[in-house]
Length: 228
Image (tube, rainbow, N blue to C red; front, side):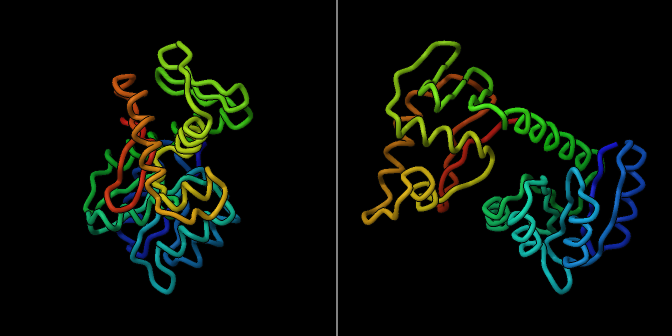
């Protein structure tokens, strides 16, 4: 039985979620404060966390940040606002998805199942260099990019950038972060080198699949997004 930890100070929402999700064969634990939720996360070791942003004492942003310092447990953030800023910040901190209040229980269940499927797929790839999604395979060890089963010539730095984004799919990275992670040094000039490499990658990937995309998050950076 998969385990869900709900961290939310609204007792009515928590109880409603608990009843619904238990009927869907999940095991559910509840915490009403951020610090209590962090302790529960360590002890309970849930498969997924539903995390409210507006929490007493320690808010959801800080809780998500602290979870990500030591764990890759998937986190779905719950917010009363649909602001793009909130979603971008959450994704930067490592959240896997967002649910906006008021929500439908069926939507919550669908999002939980979708995130758990993606996590299972990612975990199955951890022991292998090969990253595989619809119509695309990427291997750094073999220096190989296959699109629709055919090998494509690609410069090594473009391949490294694509591999990094695809291995952290649905997470947004700023240009500075990509320079640090892919180029592995503090770049002294501007960040347009990332834009150039993204442009070249898009030319290669255009029309390959409708299930994923190399997406620009305006004002922030880029991500390899899986489309549902």
